[in-house]
Amino acid sequence: MSLRLVPFADPGVPDTRSGLRLILWLEHQQLRGQLAAVGWGLLYFGGIAASPVAVGLAVQAVIDKSWSRLMLAGGLLLVFGAAKSAADSYFHRAVVTNWISTASRLQQLLFRKASELGSLLTRRIAAGEVVAVSSGDVEKIGWFVEVLGRFAAALLTCFTVVVGLLFYEPQLGLVVAVAVPVLAFSILPLMGPAERRADAQRAKGGRATELAADTVAGLRVLRGIGGEQLFLDRYRAASQEYRASAVHSARMWSLIAALQVLFFGLFLVVVVWLGVRLVVAGRISVGELVTTYGFITFMLVPLHTFEETASAFIFSKVSARRAARVLSLQRMDETRGTGAAQVPEGDLVDPVSGLEVPAGSFTAVVCGNPDAGGRLADHLGGHSPEAEPGDASAMLDGVALDDLPLESARTAVLVQDKDPVLLSGTVRELFDVPSSGAVTVERALEAAQCADILDVLRQSLPAGGPDDPMDAVLTERGRSLSGGQRQRVALARSLYVDPAVLVLDEPTSAVDAHTEARIADGLRALRAGRTTVVFTSSPLMLDRADRVVFVPDGRVAAVGVHHELVHTDRHYRAVVTREDEPTFEESA
Image 1 (cartoon, rainbow, N blue to C red):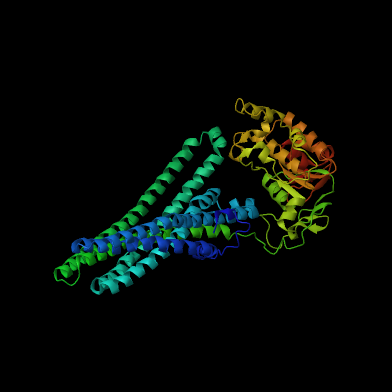
Image 2: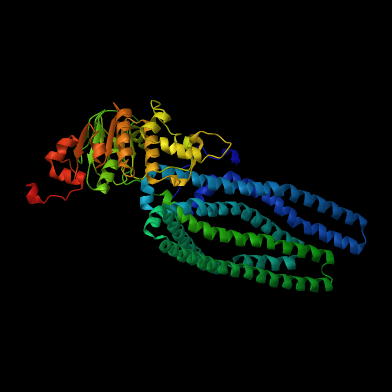
């Protein structure tokens, strides 16, 4: 299989019932590549294995002083060496192609799963665990797929050599035929402990990665409260546990390797002793002994390959279990999203809370509880990660969003949550997203009040280079920006997409009041005639909304404009102005 096919147009549907089934599925996908690896491997190992025939013939020719046989031996060595050299590069290329292709296929599957689940992924599995699966685990699984082709070629060559020895020198061949399987399977009793140690090492490594990811994600907060040292100590302890488990696992593999060398050395001593006795007895020639010795020393190559295959299988099996766990994740109700693809436009209605958003309006929603507001915002976008089977779907123009394919629902309704993600790359690449084309990047940035951010980014450009701030590079998750700057850039991206319905969850919680007022004006102007829902408790944003809906306990309690609700609803006023909540007797 050529690497020109990577990335694959369709990585396929993996078998995630277990880690072993996932490995078998990946092997099946790479079947043509494995057959190519085995073919070149047979030629490569065959060139090595056949060389002792020429060497033994040359030694005997020298003893017999036969120049013709010596020339023949030299020619055979040249042919075998040429075959080995020619096959070596193609063999290496085939096995590495299998490795890269498998790793790429797995990464595509993981990326597709992350795109399918969205924020639900990190709610079910820690972000650090996802990182560990998509990096180290992918590499280990690819390693086993790579080594399996070498294993098959080495096994077939080893079998051929043993059969050949039985015909060439039956007495020594019989010893080899009995000893080689014993040597190959001598490490099996140690495989169980090795797997358990590898599993423990992988678990501790994942834990350390999770701590690192959490610490980096909350670094700003940690610095603010002086908690850096606490998390540093936790990570140091976790990393030391991981190091100790890696050493513990490595000791087992060192023992396995040492036993392989010891057993093979003893076997070689026994064979040489028997061979010398046969030479002394005149039953075989010196050349035949040299040939036999060469065949037996060749066995060390496949035995090392068998050991590496066992190691790769243990580690890949552990990693495949983790990868299968991620790839097997599904949304809670897989019966949804099976309707015809369409992008409806009209009134947005949530039958659960009673929230109704007229088409083309600028509606603000006040919940009081930020978590409840986030859940309602997710629900309005359809395919909510918090949805339970049987929950009523939000309706857009009478069409249930949960019944639409996920892509259609996301096209119709765009939900920007409290912590939008900014991927690393240039600002220009950040806006390389599907859009209606009705809003330019410049207008979106202006409405989100990003002029000062562009000025700062322009200053970060290298001297003598381009002066366009759109070419400035943002670090991972936009951490080179402040919280308010990240919010504004993310808002500009959402405005640029220009969806039929835009749902914003606390889009200005990290900006100052003056900037927030200008953002509210820009948002209202740019989204004129388009349905916009803003979850907020900011008076500046509420004052500019066409209508305000108060949803204190999961149900709509009041609808109106901001000034009216402040004077007529005590509960609403308490949430918006941060006053003490009135008691039930007072409200009565």
